[in-house]
Amino acid sequence: MKLNRIQQEEVLTFAQQLIRVPGTSGNERQVASLVNQKMKELGYDHVHVDPYGSVIGVVEGLHPGPTLLLDGHTDVVPIHEPHQWSYDPHGGVVVDGKLMGRGAADMKGSLAAMICAASYIDRAAIAGTIIVSASVAEELMPGRALEKILDAFPADSVIIGEPTDLRLGFTEKGRCTIGMKVMGKIAHSSRPELGENAIYYAVNAIDRIKGIPLRSDTELGSEVIELVEIRSSPSPGNGSVPDQCWGLWECRILPGESKKALLDRFNNCQNDTRWQEKIRFAIETIDVVCYTGKHLVGKDFLPGWKGDENSRIHRQMEAAIERCGIPLIHWPVPYGCNALASCGLRGLPTVVFGPGDVACAHRPNEFLLVRDLWKATEVFGSAMEFNGVLL
Image (cartoon, rainbow, N blue to C red; front, side, top):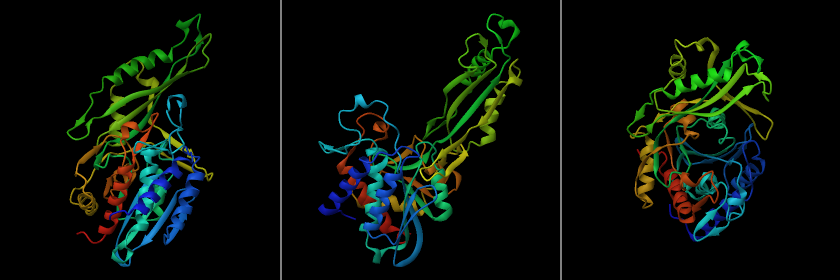
């Protein structure tokens, strides 16, 4: 697929419109409404909004074939440092060939590219079904909204449009959050010997966890086990030895790690300690209230995955990238995204591909090169045109 000038302007304008509508996780209603309207305007065969607020558009080819789903999330992270932005975070302005704004790279640009590309393809040459999903709540809860979409719209293969700088993502670390609860015994702070300070137990337990040997992978590098939050009770603690301490560990796990094996590593490192019986580890449950009022609930364990280079979607994307004149670079994805659900949990052939550098995501002055936005649109369109044709 080669975009003409009118199509280039439409993709850019739509990406700007998406950036100008803020939408953090649980607050994507306006973004979803814009996507819904655009899909209908572009002539999708069917457009649905599911109970959680994700928008799903369907384009039917004229020949039988497999179903390809392309997914992009509608939510963005909040802006915590507005004074550090050189431009309005929700302005969507173009400066020196860069589309500026929150979500430009992660990932409203890619979402605009996918949505528009599906309307530009020649349906007479398409086999099978093309589905484009604009999913909710990915920033707080990767994968769960896409699981609900796949329940209603089964697919044979999946493209996740996260920023890869136009490289082909073929493997990805998984993610898990583990809660650590430590029990002590409350006492007046003037008589600490009558209590058991849960914070002291927690500090010792943390040292043991920091000593867990980190595994590594030749493509994905080292796993991550990082303490990201800690608090104690009672709080404020004036006058009391704390009887409870809670910590949160965020883990970036390698393919092949199971829930039980990961928890065993945390539990085993506390063996033969005086606080062993006072500490509990559990995989956290995340509950996100969607803008529709429905709750997305799930355990925060998403296994890593490695794609099959011989799968149809892998070869489709390789051919599409090469057709569009982009260097074919295979890239291990270092972050978590909805592919953890489609491939990690469900085993569906999946690749990750999109415009933008993840290094500028979630940061002030986030941007996306306009030329890469257009090039990604061409790649997505070419991949759709190869659906059911490239064997």
